[in-house]
Image (cartoon, rainbow, N blue to C red; front, side, top):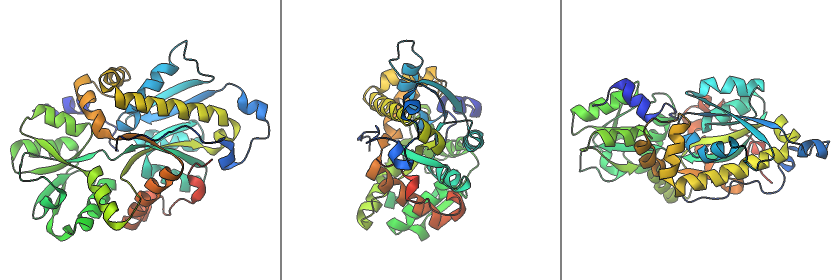
Amino acid sequence: MISRRGFLSAAGLGIMSIALTGCGAKGTAASAKGSTADSAASNSSTSVRVASLKGPTTIGLVHFMDQAASKDSGLANSYAFTLSTAADEVLPSLIKGDIDIALIPANAASVVYNKTKGGITCLNVNTLGVLSVVTADTSIVSFKDLAGKTVYLTGKGTTPEYVMNYLLDAAGIAGNVTLEFKSEATEVVSVLASDPTAIGVLPQPFATAALAKNQALAAPIDLTDAWNEAAEQSGDTSELVTGVTVVRNEFLEEHPHAVEEFLKGQSASVEYVNEHPDKAAELVVEQGILESEAVAQKAIPACHLVCLTGKKLKQALAGYLEVLYQADASSVGGSLPADDFYYQA
């Protein structure tokens, strides 16, 4: 088996339906939060500071990052990208105003919204679920097959636990599944390697890296699909969400056209990555998100990279945050965001 250090390097540290919807702004960004006093200033070129994580939430952005770095980018604004290994490294800078746009975990966006008293706006959902059930047990083919089993995963007291509890309850097997938590994904992989009957839940790209190293393993269940099935049965419009893109309201009001340009670039980038995972994998490695092009290429389809805006943004995200709020209100900052959290034309 790959070493713990090697596995982390291969899979990346950013743990947090491929059908796309446009991520570009519909109307002017200023209409969501009020118009700027000086339209000439709003049209002027500016430098946009963008922060994101070394994981799935940034993979969809790599083509735009590459474009922005080109001297012939054709962009009206310049972009400075900062990649971090944990959300805790990004959020303080976002709150202080040292970052203009950030790609962060969905629940973290709600926390910042509450902490800043509505100081940020969520522009889009950029990544749906990235969790998969991984096992060598060939009898596991559907989510309900987990009944009577022990499932190993990380995230005690955080979103992975709340997601699993929600799905287990929706499937009617909450009382028949034991969740055993490990501190790191590599520990889950070790259990899977030593016990062919073991069942784990791993995030991307850890799941893909694990399958590449152990041919006996398979990923029969994508929790994004399990969530969609549960939502369909209950008539819910929510989706399993991993990452979102947010902007400081002050920046949005002062530079609406820069925000629009970023959104268009992000939308085109997500489309490119999903359609060309082989070429995108090279960019993922170039940006230092992963070290293995092979792992990146195979992981991209399972990362569910999207750009959900407008009505679809609110439908997907509001229901997801509601699930987290019911499990632990502090996970979303104590209260659910108001309507002004969701970017609208």
